[in-house]
Image (cartoon, rainbow, N blue to C red):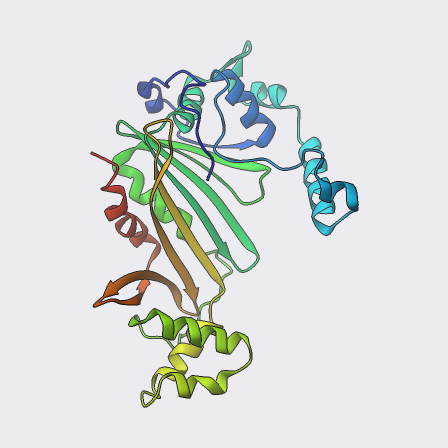
Length: 293
């Protein structure tokens, strides 16, 4: 997770976040221009594409090198940012829209940060939510080239979090062999998943002893996942970022399952429970309660 420099940009006037637009698409160069206009506000992510001066870069080309070059070329092919912002009415006489500046400023000066990473099949969404004093700004992208910037009051946060977890329209669901709720020893789940991945499914009956009904359930946990969701919550109210919790979901055949580790009588266990995108805020609530008044 990026460490936010709270001292670089001026604090955003939160009253500006009530102005329109409330949700807008921006290219990476446009986003950089707005960050510069907001007092050099740092963006909440690292951008690749710079020349590789590391030892690995000097030893020869790798597949990652080609990907970085393709990404850098795609960025260069985007429209000139100041002209495109001006055409859209977001930059007038070199002055950026106040609502956008307020949102970018909030991204850089929050008290609470949530970083979300969602993968479904070959698709991946990265989103950064930043909150302070009753307002939230979010930034999301699927390709690192075009970003959605949004800002809204905290009471609308639950709806915005749910949007991140919504499955693609072309995602096909089917019945799962796993029930809607499981509570199992962590070691059993870990060993079963490793056995299936190692093509040793024959070991599952040994792992479950006499409870053979668990074999198809454990097999489902190892073979069905086609996606994951990870949300990291941090307290960034001071110069030292403090990670206070992580929420993890896995996508099974019929939808999301929350993974909730816990310790009972000295034994590590994991609860696996069916979840809907609208449940993400409730899953994050106990963690957020530790850092929000």
